[in-house]
Length: 629
Ligand SMILES: [Zn+2]
Ligand SMILES: [Zn+2]
Image (tube, rainbow, N blue to C red; front, side):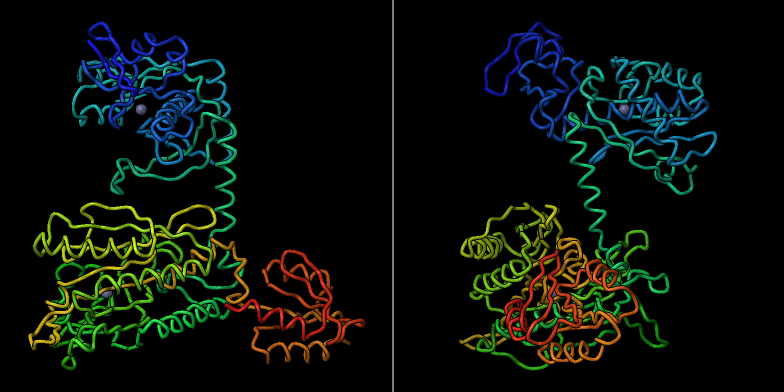
């Protein structure tokens, strides 16, 4: 038989040859370094036979960044972990241990509970196994044999897995441990050059809270120690930037079980919010969006008309009254369309752009809530543009230009994804050709690269999802620009055309920050709390050196405040050194120290990050003016 290598050459092999046989036929070095066979995106254990005509790519220990290669490395690491735990904790029962993004875990039922401190000994045991050397062997056995085997080992979870497994049963053995497993696995443990256990957590058997609670040990592994080091550094950096931690440290907001998923905004956090709100209003006004205000609660009838009652009710907070049921709005669209319908419109009115940043409420599961990035109270920088068919492309172009301006202002990278017609859809193929093309041309005209998500559009129209890339290179889905002909139709929106026909307008839904909550969470992490001057909650702090300087320092602060900046005084209750340090921890952009030698003619100014200068007040204020957005 023959298999096909990536460069299209064919390799002649005896029938029944495995991946490892093929690697050996190419060369001993490849055979030694191979970790996996990949064929058109699916992976296969090296020990399994190849098919005639199969395309074959070898992944090796040099594919250190390849997700499939890392997956097999980490899966094998999980098996080493199980072996170590069984040796150190006799009587432990093993459950399952898959690779996951960034690592692996294994679930155990320990006879005695273990603690984080116990991980070091387990990790050392795994490292000893790696040093000693481990090879994996694979065997296929019958279901009965497998059941007997795990019953004899008193591993009830494995017995249950045997009974519910589909297809053939295979076992992998290394050292003293045999696991029920489909694989694939490494040939041996040599490629595992870096191994680390990272944390402990509780987990239910098969993810069901009705079942027994198990202990989950998380870990990770790499082909190179440098990769593990870089990964741990990224984790540490993410922890340092975590907006939930910085939110408390910088006194921005807090969350409380009294209203899950609805942040309490402290004065300093509200400053950031207000600056974003001012930016939202300013740019909307510039770009022809008009502010409106619509109710927060609506009769069930509106949601029935819009389709939300059928599709979205479980996420809506309902308010039952004796004679009718109301709901708090989870989105602004139906309200804006109801407002639109208040009078007749002509084609001359379009595009008509309504903007509103109202609080919306969505009943997210308590377990899914996460800081500011997954909340129940959501405040979108929302807008709905009512347009004619001919206006779609220009309007989308304008929305893209708007969002690019906003993200650039914060130095955020942006990624655009175009979602096209889904299988279940309204409208003809011709119509979809037209709308998809309108979105594509707008993206291309604005010079934006984009990915296409085939079939991911809404049933009434295509959309563009906006993803932010932050300083750590992480991607966050934020805003959306969505074309809709269905909802305006359901709600009976119309306009009169030039030749006096009644037509349904298209509606473009757009939110560019996405939501204020999420956007502020992302900004906090992106800047690690070091906010740009113009949104910093306190922009200048004046520090009188001693009691005797308080009056003059207060007068100075008042003049800076009158010039339009957020300024406060660091009262001399502590040493000047401690107060300078505190201002640094609070990440305040400018600190002005005021003592015997200082006056309006000569201020001692410390910039965030350490630079110190001396300048007269007029020059300082002139410098601040350049930092406004
Ligand atoms: Zn396994
Ligand atoms: Zn909408």
